[in-house]
Amino acid sequence: MSENISSRSRLALTASWTAAARSQESAREDRLFDDPWASALAGADGAEWLEQSSPEGVASVVLRTRFFDDYLLRIAREDGVRQVVIVAAGLDTRAFRLDWPAGMQVFELDQAAVLERKQTILDEAGAESTCERRVIATDLVGEWEAALNAAGIASDQPAIWLLEGCLSCLSPEDLRALLVRVMKASFPGSYLAFDVINSATLTSLLTRPLVEMQARAGAPWSGTMDDPKSLLKRHGWRAELTQIGSPGADHGRWPYPVPADDAEAPHLWLVTARRPYRVGEGAHDQAQPSQPGPGASPSFLPRRQRE
Ligand code: SAM
Image (tube, rainbow, N blue to C red; front, side):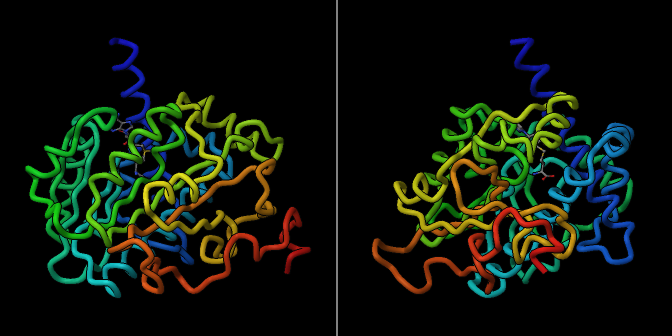
């Protein structure tokens, strides 16, 4: 039990790290997004992490943040979905910083301690949400659906689910269990987005700095998926994979080769998926950004050779 509690507070720390990466990005002139609250939310823990973090550690957070910003807004605007569920929201401020369409509801789930600290800082800063925001303090390794229903989600309407930065820190069993629960809680027509690593990422020389950084910081990666598309397909979802550093998730910021679609290679995947309204539904299943898939990048070539 006490081990569980200390592992939860270590995971809570990871939310300060992502806030710190967003704070650094927000200070750039060529920023990919602006999170004016990120610095206060990151606090001393986040600043300390930033000092010891590697450039690729920060870049991967920044690129996935922008990728999911674009994805959420595009689906909301183009498909009219008016519910977003941010699972393991941590210190995410999308409910405040994104220009949501009218009528948007954003539900945030995380540990009570994380959500309470976030609320205090946002209140002190006078932050105003750009949507109807509801927070749900819960343990995600357990039953959270009733609390989400009680918070007012329309379970008979599609939603966009986002699980960002959380799956890799879960055990493989907890990762799968959480994803399956999310899929079961989703009404047909719902969308799902998450980032995940494959198992080769844990052992590859290419990704060793990232893996070691996570371990040093106290939140080692362990949750992996080698074939996200197949798992989602088994549950009736259609998925697309984008890799960090490939078009739509690069913005000239990723200095490393983008691995080919090869199980032996490390992959930092951004997964987007849709549950069709009915089996066999076609063209409208996955409203993806107009971009080539991961396989479109020549593999294992340094950027200068790719360009
Ligand atoms: N999605 C946010 C982001 O990208 O900034 C936060 C990511 S942070 C790396 C991981 C988050 O998962 C933390 O806020 C942590 O509290 C949350 N988390 C991990 N395990 C959890 C659990 N069992 N129950 C509730 N929250 C959990």
